Image 1: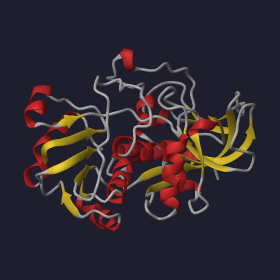
Image 2: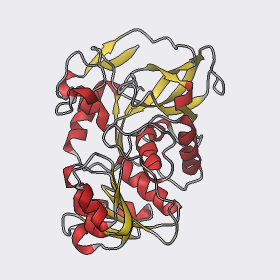
Image 3: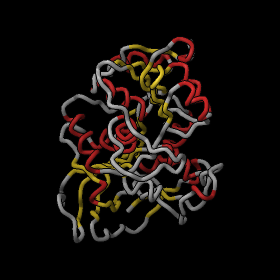
Length: 332
């Protein structure tokens, strides 16, 4: 089969289109003929060797490796112990994450734990299905249901989503991206008033997805104009995430998707809970998301599509940022 592999860490140029052996499924796994693979930030973090990440947080990487964790395709074969899937089924999934940061989705075939998979809705093509798993599960586990008891490697406090309802306001920062545009729709599905923060180029797109209010961060700072929000889902996160503290009411919650820098004493004084979690593969939750997509409650946005052999170009596009939805690779 054809696959993308990296033999050394570095920029997009280390991604090589090669011929390799088709993998064999272990017990409780299926072999999937890949139709599309979604790109996610861990793909380029791993490609670069995760610079800046302390060694104790780095999973082991055996080179050469095939990147990719998000996949949509067709079940080719099932191993012993697999129930619920059969050859010919169209499936999608986030594979082995975070136990294995890269599971070989950038290839024509990949093995997948059956528990990580969900049936692909007939209403969703493989390109959009491949764009859903990691981003959709991140939004779901932050806002709706964590679905596991694994502690976050970045904090001691356990993440607990807020029970959203029509009396609440949810602000989503980075609302135009893969996680952000799905989180916005999940909050709206729960009845919450939604505030989208993104660049002006995304306003029409996000209004169509249900944003009740819009802030163009190139013109206004949300911390200057927004108050009394119940939940901030900061899909950008990082060191600047604490700037959203003034937007929250006492008793509110700030959920940075990427670990931020906070003062616990300040959080306590403001009466604000700051927690996060690490997304984990979950086929059952993905099936719930698929049902929302199938009924039109949630739309999956795809920014651009590249053939597998142009994975380098896809990573170059990702490095430019300002994406509207996801980038997807296809196998033809």
